[in-house]
Length: 318
Image 1: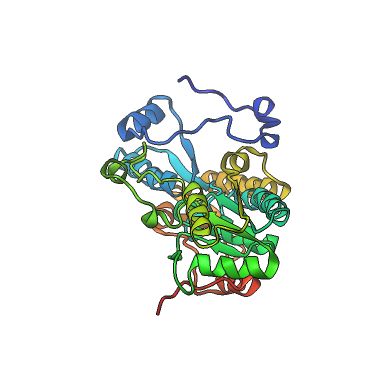
Image 2 (image 1 turned 90 degrees about the vertical axis):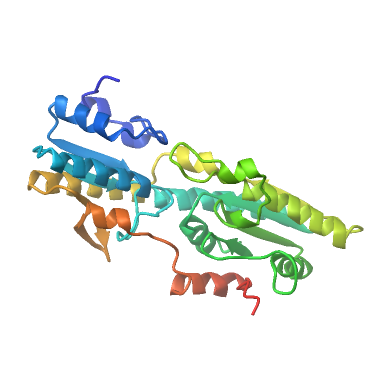
């Protein structure tokens, strides 16, 4: 693919669009070809935009550029709706994702409330982290239970998900359940081929936890309450969340990230990520960001706030 000159006229309205004009893909990382192309085209600044996997790839590019002793600055710009880039306060796209997720939750609540023993089930993005599910739950206040990859849960028995949902249905006549895509993956039955399956980036292929939960909920109800009405409304807004234009907060944040990255490169820095740490914009070594994880801390006040808001079980069998 031939390079495109990103002049002000060309990019003038890009911030108003969803998705990415630069295009994206999984896999296909050929380090030598990438650095060869950068070198042969005479670039002296490289801005690498993406999430935690992209940052790990950026480290390899940075190291190869250093090995070749090329006068090329490399910087990473943290863009991922999952908010799983470590060290920084948040990544670009996260606030927009939470806003759109909240709309899906509101729709699920309306559907659940309109049915007899209705459950609104919403699956949100989050392979390894539950930040979107957590923040959408807190901002919505319509969620009865939030399931994230950082917390193991179980279905049957006292203190399990079914026991909790039955209590909510008896009390309120409806319930809303939010699940991150990476939650409960170890509970979903797989054949041998599915256990070995990997995507283009080498990550295990996840099965649809939302469809699995929907099926398990229906099986549970038909087994224990066959003579009572029951409805599960399943909403999966994954690509709707990814495709929308950035909201005002993310637009402002992206501008600050871009300015910070550009200023750092022009000041002579390389191998860094720009982003806020405890509210202060900083330049963090790229290798440190790539090594760090940004899991939901289930021991801090935010998860305690979730438990306080919806009184969901802690799924602790002991």
